[in-house]
Structure formats: C-alpha cells, structure tokens
Length: 155
Length: 265
Ligand SMILES: Cc1cc2nc3c(=O)[nH]c(=O)nc-3n(C[C@H](O)[C@H](O)[C@H](O)COP(=O)(O)OP(=O)(O)OC[C@H]3O[C@@H](n4cnc5c(N)ncnc54)[C@H](O)[C@@H]3O)c2cc1C
Ligand code: FES
Ligand code: FES
Image 1 (cartoon, rainbow over the protein chains, first blue to last red):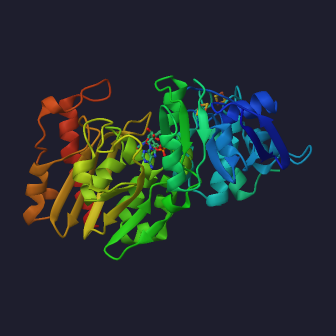
Image 2 (cartoon, each protein chain N blue to C red; image 1 turned 180 degrees about the vertical axis):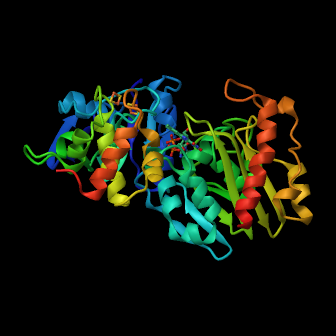
Image 3 (cartoon, rainbow over the protein chains, first blue to last red; image 1 turned 120 degrees about the horizontal axis):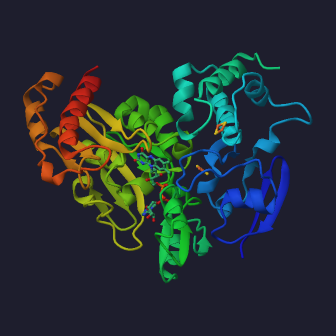
C-alpha cells in the first residue's frame, strides 16, 4: 500500500492509502476532517473544493497519491482559533448559506478567487463559481458575501 | 473504483518502462476525465501511470512561427499565459472557457487531445489552427490525429508530449456551452492562416470536423456577413435532449459568425 505524506492545514499528515483512495476520502476518513463534503459523483458540484499548493481543486477528483508531498488547506484550516477567516465571516454576516452543504467548497473557491483577483466584478464572481453548485440559496447572498469580503467589510 | 498500482515516473523513459511493465496500464494527466470514469467503473486498469512529475511534458515555448505547449500544461496555465494571450489569444480564450476554474487547474491539453471527447474544446482548437500533435514516437497533423468520438491516431502506450500551434493571422473560438457541463453543444474555431481559412467544429457531430462550406464562403471575404450556412449533413450530427441535429446545424453558422466577428475585432 502506498504511503502518503502531506501538509494539511499546516501540520504534517501521513497514512497508508490504496492507489484508488481519493484525496477527499483521505481527508474525511483518515484524518477525520469532515468539513470537506462530497455532493456528487460527476466532479461537478464543488462541495469538495480544497486548496492544493494554494490552488482550489476538487478533492473528489484527485487521488491521495497525487497530493503526496503537497500542502493542502481545508475549510478547517481557514479560521485562526475562534476568529473566523474574513470569507467565513462574510458568509455568516450576509446569510450566504441555508443548509450549508455547499458552503465549505464555496468558501474555499471564493478564497482562491480573491487570491487571484482582489476586486472581482459580480460577473467575474458568478463565472468563478461555475464549478460550485448550491441547491438552496439562489447564489445571490453568496455573491454578496464575496463582494463584502473583497471590500474588506466583514468583521 | 477498483484498485490499481500507481506509478509516478520522472521521465518519458521511465514512463515507457512503467507502461511496458504493466498488464493493462492507463496514463493519467490531470485525471479530470479518467478519475470520473474510474469512479463509475467504466475502466479497470491494472496500473495508473501518472505523468505529473515529467518535466519534459511541461511549459509553453515560443518557436517563432508556432507556440509549442507541453502535454501536461493545464488549461489554466494556457488561459493565463502572456505568451499565448499575445500570440494566439483565441487559444487562451478557448482554454479559459473549459469547464470551471477547478477543472482548469487540473485538466491538461495532452489529456484533452488524447481523450478526444466529441464535445471537447481543444480538438476544435487543434484542427482549426492546423496544429501538430507531438508524441513519444512521432508527429501527427491534427487533421489526421482525431478520429470519431474518443478515437485518435495514438497507439497503445504512445504518449502525447506536446502540441504545436502555428500562429494564425486571425482566429477566434466561439462556443455554445451546455449550461450544466460547460462542454460544447457546438464550438467553432475559425482561423485565417497562411494556408487559407480553416473552420473546425466540435460538439455538433461524432467528433471534430472541418466545415468546408463555411471555409469556402470565407475564402474571398473574411467577414461575418460572408459566412454561409454549415455544409454538414444533418444525419451526421448529434440529436439529444440538449439540442436536435437541425438546431446544432443552425448553431454552427451562428458560432462561425460570432467567431469571425471576434477574430476581426
Ligand atoms: C466538470 C467537468 C467539466 C468539464 N468541462 C469541459 C469543457 O467544457 N470542455 C472540455 O473540452 N473539457 C471539459 N472537461 C474535461 C477536462 O478538460 C479534462 O481535463 C480533459 O478532457 C482531460 O484532461 P486530463 O488532463 O484531466 O486527462 P486525464 O483524465 O488524466 O486523461 C484522459 C485520457 O487521456 C489519456 N492521456 C492523458 N494524458 C495523456 C498523454 N500525455 N498522452 C497520451 N494519453 C494521455 C488518459 O490515459 C485518459 O485516457 C470537463 C471535465 C469536468 C470534470
Ligand atoms: S463532490 Fe461534487 S465535485 Fe467533488
Ligand atoms: S446552502 Fe444548501 S446547498 Fe448551498
């Protein structure tokens, strides 16, 4: 069985996996980091988005062995202590979630957007969220939250 | 997903050896077609040979009259490359319209051309721009590389190493995406090259094809008004819940006009 070692949320994590173990399975089942969700079988919903070496990816469509040696950030790695990351705070303040299932992926994807483009237009935000599906909110408040986070309005 | 042996060779030589040493190997690039297929148990390889650590497959190079893009270059890297944006903006915009940002972070040009999905964007980019596919064994003109759906000139174990795109005079790609998957219902690459006008269509048929009727109509005047209707036979076009063959045929003309307008802008 292959052994993988990666840095997850700043800490070294390793484990024995099968070739077929998905990164999301490694995170959820081996490391018990269940904030990253799985919403589909078709790589389309984005509930599983995490950052690998700083870039947002769908952890359901990457093998754990492909992430061997990488730095991974999950939703659990964003807050510092009890203080929410500004994007999390913006989602909270703007009521950008209902059931919350899509939220970890939305937040991770949105954080990556602002890394690339610190003041995106509404169109750019909507286009960036192409790979993140939400069945509850209608996206309006998600877009608003990202605009607020970009403007530095969130606590 | 069935289990498999995993290999991460550091060179093409090591990759060839890993392929030769396995009973039923499959190559993996970005995994964004392969992993979904494995999850659905549509494939059951004995071994997966991951190309991600092979430096010779990466990067974008200016070769004078052409740009050479390594097989492991991601869609995001092509879309954001200053070199591609300045020399062949049509190609940067094609890559930037594939799937969604996370798909573009992982999916590669080599995987896309090797897979030859009949609704994928790069096959139209390659045929429309008259590209050449470089492999571990030879060089193949795009016109001869892509067969019907998912079929290519590649032999078992043959590795796409790069794709070289001659820099066109003018070119643009216009796509009518499936609103759910973002794959092309119809995508058209139009290019004015030193060998004349090339018009390549994806999504509409059972594989990428050149629309010679539209090419001829643009030979004298490269303007949107000159674009003739598609010459494709409706019997050769796809009909499904997303669009009928008749509608797809109509869209080919519409997308070709949009592409000519964008190329001339
Ligand atoms: C949600 C979603 C949306 C998408 N939307 C689009 C879209 O709008 N347009 C579009 O064009 N595509 C789309 N795709 C497909 C995406 O572009 C894939 O990344 C691409 O088709 C395959 O590239 P890959 O690097 O992921 O290849 P992989 O999945 O790793 O490989 C695909 C196939 O090619 C073979 N292969 C890979 N690399 C090589 C090589 N160098 N030499 C020989 N064989 C090789 C593999 O063995 C495999 O059979 C989408 C995918 C997803 C998941
Ligand atoms: S779980 Fe749906 S895209 Fe990953
Ligand atoms: S809040 Fe329920 S899916 Fe987005």
